[in-house]
Length: 273
Image (spheres, rainbow, N blue to C red):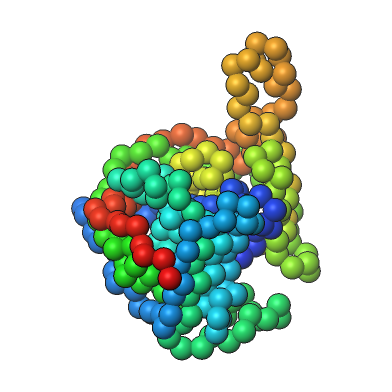
């Protein structure tokens, strides 16, 4: 599942929810990510003002990439279309330090237009994703090594009662979330759902439903309570596992298998400019 597709559909009210996708690539052996196919003309990097609102978008100069108040771990995950749990070997500052990064592409990108096709908008973000990889390589000295590790994941299948997803109408695709208790989606494929679930469960979710098409759905659940809440009998809502079955007619089963991990072999703090 591509991070950029989740990002394009998300409402940014809860920034932490946007951070990170989603289906892990499965393969064998060790691999290094390929060099970026696109690069940049100019890039500006500064430590963030902690009070600034987090932001990611294609609104940099000449249609370039802009990130505000973002951890480097988030940006690495975004650049390589992986979840944060798929990045290993990062020093503490990669998560704790936040940066503002604005890059100008080597060639001018067309301005983003609300009426632009999803495929054109996705291709634009794809190119900026590659440029972000170049920035991470050139300014942060990032060197990644890929390897496969046995990790937990979930299989998503159709429940015995059948799925309860509603066929999509004519409205524009969107995803809204109130954090870790509610999702409302319109016009999305199940790739989006597995991506969202992988965030909540902190593990890959594989779609094995064989259901295709775009759907509308709402999902409400209660996060796992703390021990004190259990003792006080405060947890009254459904868990995400029972909510998936009762509200969407789907089922999550735990499993274990090979997951692509990127190990950070080298990374350095950049000089600000």
